[in-house]
Length: 477
Figure 1 (cartoon, rainbow, N blue to C red):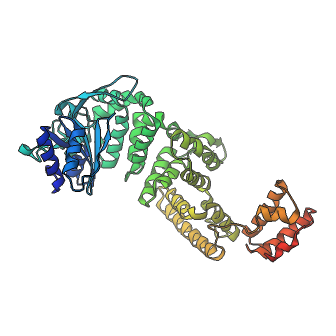
Figure 2 (figure 1 turned 30 degrees about the vertical axis):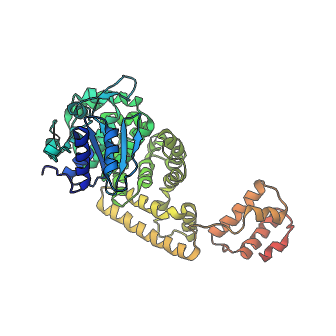
Figure 3 (figure 1 turned 120 degrees about the vertical axis):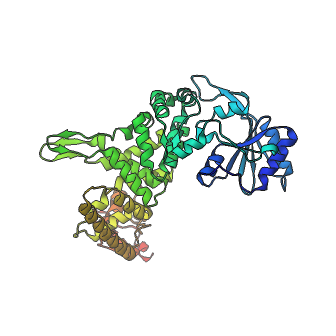
């Protein structure tokens, strides 16, 4: 592993020149340096100076072509300066002190050593000098380079103090371990378990932001295992923690739904699933503990867990401060329908059943099938291959029906307005029944979704209900 080198970018020399003129020792510190060592892409550069970070940012801005606008955050003592290649953030070196009830520190000017000591982890306490006399020299007070070599997440100071001061750092430790595939150093991990209750003072938005970064890692199951084993998951997402464990009665035992869920999540990641498909994987069996029943002649059942889980999704998203719009509705749909394709693996599956699935999933059919494939986690290789082959057959049948009937964005030609105008009705249960009858006939393949054929069927249904048509001219539409 080589010592990190500042990129060949004149921007860093410009910062060094401005810092020299102001008499401020300056350093690039933090994630940018860490990512240089790890050969990871990074565009956010944190510049720390022993002096006024805002003044340094403004001085650098005046030296750059076009004099880009410096955005100042006076309350935080920081300044942002965007450039074509990187995003610069400037701050003065500081030391921090914390109150027990808050993770917001009281900040005052400090030395470089004090600034490095307040960093969350040793791998983020690396610096590169921007001073003329030792430009590019590595600053590594806490053996961050050694921890990168050892693939270790460790706090610079006493981890109990680090995590008690700012409990979000516990989530960040898990996140970095997951993203980088590092271990958390034993004393540091033990401190997470000891201080886990401090997470309660952190805002849900901050917790969920870290959780989403764990979920977006290449192997998120690793992060969830760390969260569970430390006791953090039980505090931040208790419903998921309840999936853990196997109950056995006689010869009957069910699978551990926690580890099954993590395998499904990893499978979705391998298949290229986005954040919301990953959330669907996390939540697809979330209601199994609430629906678990034991029957002596059958064993363990989880009847209706997909419907109950779907009903839970809005509250889970609300509690976790996740978006409640289209993203939530998509996850809810996938949770509700995740068992449906399994019923379609039989050779006798009807076009009607396929139409109904296409109608209910719409544009999410491909995502649903990806989730269903990911849900096959059997250790029996032959059984798994058989299920995957059957799903391939179902996907071919779905494709054939979709090409024939175009059901992804299907809308019945007979609307509630047409029904009310035809029979002189006001909004009522009767209108809904007639609308459903037409929809069912189309999905069953009895009629095509064409106006004249559907309208003729509507008239028959109305006649059966004793409703005389009042506006037969509608047949000409």
